Image (cartoon, rainbow, N blue to C red; front, side, top):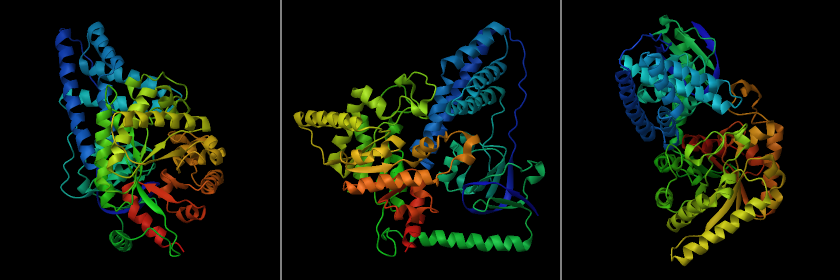
Length: 539
């Protein structure tokens, strides 16, 4: 029996045979071509096929995982049409008279190197995306397209790393666990694994030898261990542990319809984070009490122009109606930083996480903001609706927002369009907002703490920088004190305060959050029932 230790990305226990995914970069042959036009045509035909493939992946991800996660593949389609990418390939074929595979490979590498050399980690991460897209086109042209792995039995996938497109193509009914040598808990692949409810372990020391194939293995990602060829006693132990875990998860289903309350009767609102209307079924099937974070970015990303007011209205209406009176909190546009849409034409920034993003865009480009507010207010006529504004740092911003809201309501009234009572809240995700939360609380109906960004800004750690993961401590005293201050100021002003960041699903700290007075926790739908169980176990 051999053991490897690693880092848990998504917890769970899996037992079964290994399926080793060999990726490796295949050498691209370079040769001279005589007919430039034919070679360009060959590339363009392959590109068109790649776009079709990515559209299929987008639809599969949208159907099986969720709207927000599917946008990864929308972004890949846009990369295929990037002018720098296309011009680089065209120039190389026409000027150097080389075959299209070589031109795509070299152009992809060149662009990836530029991304890799950037200071910003979000832009660095685009290097992997452009290489992934390039390899797809090359595979199509060379006739060596990666075959979708046909799994005849459930397996534990082991690989150097997994791209989102590889991950989504696996039959999730036959994937027991993911183990990779490289990767990040914040990667797109990690997000997909969590949404697929598949245990995921990053074990940097594992040797990717062919002998691994079909080897029996045990993955306990919570313990952070991979065992190869376990002996009978070990297999029995983990079998019992797995059975207990499955029973526990099954028992959690019995919590549907029960109160999210501690033994002493302290109730906590337990809401779901969703990325679009297609996530609604998953939220409802996990018995959510409301939507605590409806990310509206899905309406703006992966397209070439702004969504119309009517398009937005229909998306919001679908969710609000679907919740049948339960509250729906819609976060206004949070474009910028790691969520880009080219048609916004946001100038390149040295530090986009602290740049022109979220409410800053809305208050500068008021017509975009008003179109979204009109759509939300129109949809509010169909159920309980609240609006939440991201990246607030000052009272002046809230006053300006409320002035625009008044304008929107007056316009709708003048047009004879009805709307409901809409609560207005803000996200507390900057230290500045925490420090003036006493003033902010007097102007809004609720707070929701975005712990991902608040942790990043408080600790001065870029949460997308893989090399800083060991320093990214969401349990840091400074963060907990900020949460306490925010909650106290909210309660002093008579409003409620929730958490919609990843910390809300961290059950190691649930009791502490409740002790700090947090009124609401909003999490990914799969965490709702486990979190309810945790809350009910607290005295």
